[in-house]
Amino acid sequence: MAQTTATAICVFSMNLLLISMLPCVASMSSGFRLKLIHRDSPHSPLYQPNLSDFERFKRNVEISEARASYFQRWSEIYSEGNSMKPQNISLRLPLKFNEPIYTVELGLGTPFVKRTLIFDTGSGITWTQCKPCFQCFKQKEPLFDTSKSSSYKLMPLKNKLAKTFTCTVFGCAYFVGYYSGQLSAGIASVEDFTFQTAARVPYRVPGLVFGCGTFNKGPFGVKNGVSGILGMDKQPVSFARQLGGLIREQFSYCLTEKVSASYVKFGEEARTRGRNAQSTPFLKHNQYSVHYGVNLVDISIGGQKLGLTQGTFSGGCVIDSGGSISLLEANAYSAVQDSLEKYFSKFKNVRRLLGDGAPSGFLCYTQPRDFRRFPNLTFHFLGADFRVPSENLFLFRRNFFCLAMIASKNLTLLGAYQQRNVRIVYDLKDEMLSFAPEDCSRDAAA
Image: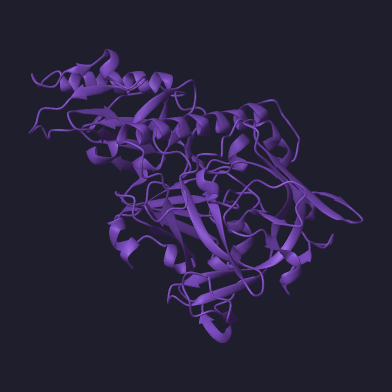
């Protein structure tokens, strides 16, 4: 499916709201992008301006814990030798999508209409609510009306992705459900999607498979702000895998330190820049045939390796955009905690914060007014070192700070907070994760 140029139907309006259409040629030589919007940004449809910093903090912890349960359940299912299809396995997973972190906007259909979807590297099929709908959760955007799109059609049984679904002679169906009660079920369909090129010109990609949800149960985000999910995992049906050669089988993001928007970039534009890029291979066994995970060998605090024993991270390290803070396997977390306690004990005015003053489950300290001597942390992946600077390692409040990681029973997950100001590249062809430090605010302003 690789190509460098294509004739597209373009709308000269970047907010995807206008319907008037003009033909144009959009160059794909440098890829295309989707704006990535954090839920705490005033521009997000999920934004809640009345939340306090502590309430946002608590909510982000809950999101990360829910993500941990999700990936842990995947691991358990694969260890049980389960042969269910991924979309049916997900019916048993305890993932809560009522608190997504990032959303994207794209165009669907001909003429295209705006869809606001949850961006998730832990999900497979992309789906949105469709009309007619037997049961739908509330959303601000109108339901996608297939009768008004000239490019909509049911997915043919001869489509190579048909084996991913439950099919009869009448068509194919999908089912995606969650332990917390949300679900989406409907028809496997084919439709045109519209994106923005690097030159800021809309570009249409025809014939992508997606789920047209006609039986759905929410909520999927507060304020009825989203209409579905953009699946970005390793499954053949995922958005990224379907784009394939068109995006040179790679995408990336660079998350900002603040909550301003950045971009998911596809194709040539997704590459890291400069000489500081490092790479490590994706794991491929068990749940990592579907999700993104890497081999974690050890951890350093302030340049000193902890010397964690072989097998500490036998479950690998999940790379996740949907969880806010990171989680560490229990033994590794204890080692990190011991190292930090030893480090901060050298400073008389930095004291461990205990009791009601500290958020439950967190390692916290009082922060003297002018104290700035915070250590860094490094994840030593196989063949690559992922450095976490102090501003990404700790959560800072008015007069105290906390380690922005929590303990997990036996799962390690690299969350979005620790990925800030790093270009993260997912190479689906060579099965590699690449990364390099970058000023992500410049990416957001581009």
